Image (tube, rainbow, N blue to C red; front, side, top):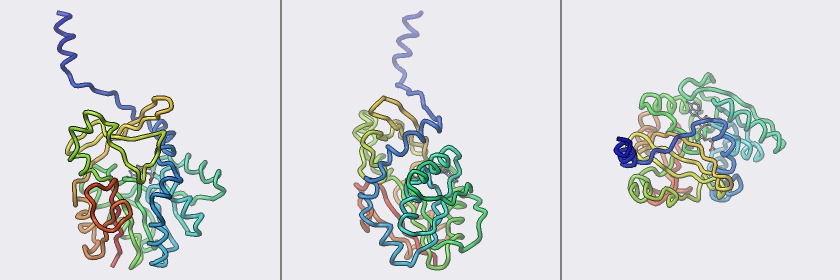
Length: 266
Ligand SMILES: C[S@@+](CC[C@H](N)C(=O)[O-])C[C@H]1O[C@@H](n2cnc3c(N)ncnc32)[C@H](O)[C@@H]1O
């Protein structure tokens, strides 16, 4: 009897226990980003986009540990750094202090941002964040809120991981998850991230600290090719005012790590 039970257990697919503890994830996040490497990979993309459109007031919709907000404040922009999660907010405050800048922190849920219409020149939602939301209506609500905050000709810059590349290489990645690597946005060499579950409606990302073997996980909604762009249109951005970039280069490259969308409010 015992032998049969063991054989049945061995036939089950390997299931990793997910570590969804936010404090573990946040403690690994800065090394997962690698701040200088993120900046270098951007090659001045944000500076160019902002200079071109006279941007001064920026709403960072999910500042996380503060990587982008702190950089933009140092560039002289007026940044409101939103972060709904208190563990991330605490880390962002510590990072700001270490960098000698002061964050203007808010804690709004994207679906209900209690700030005035048209109060910003730019909204940024970076680091593959919108895929935290699993409901279509929630995603539209969030994007509509971002649009509402923008003045006319203000811009939303939002990015997404190239999930299509993950779907296209699903078998290879699941056989060897660490074969999936990127060199943009999340550029860490000591903390790396890769998918360990790939389904149509959910992807589990595992984050591994190579120095000590610690892991943390996130469950994300994976956008299909063209899905986020269509959501942007459904939220009120005109298709001809949405520019797509692949790893900060204009156009759609199927091999990109991440896509960026610059959406001008008309
Ligand atoms: C993947 S992290 C990215 C953080 C940061 N932008 C970066 O690039 O490192 C996603 C962020 O989205 C935030 N977030 C998730 N759902 C949210 C919601 N409904 N409203 C506001 N923020 C949310 C999380 O708290 C988290 O900080």
